[in-house]
Length: 112
View 1 (cartoon, rainbow, N blue to C red):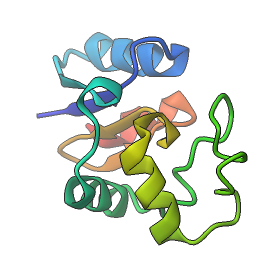
View 2 (view 1 turned 120 degrees about the vertical axis):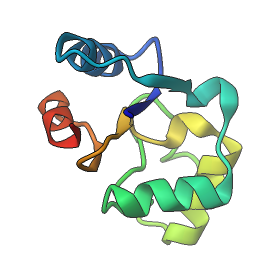
View 3 (view 1 turned 180 degrees about the horizontal axis):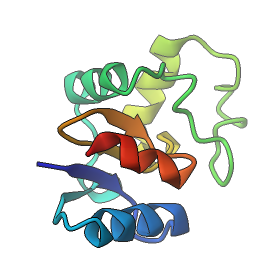
């Protein structure tokens, strides 16, 4: 089973989703912008991807800098990610082989 934490308006996220499908898989697609995050689930997902909240912080196109999150501690960043799901970089793919923050998109091949 492959799960993609996806933002439909993101070109990289759409590219990764297509790469998964082109490889013959039909993933579970979670629109995390609509669904939001649960603290425990997001913490586990980031740990599985071997990234910290600071490393998974999306700065481009968000208000992360205005919120003072660049250089902030992981606990503070995580709190803000829960309030504003768009602060989490995308896409994140959890597959049978690995969980990866798929930037660049080609990292998706490591998940299946």
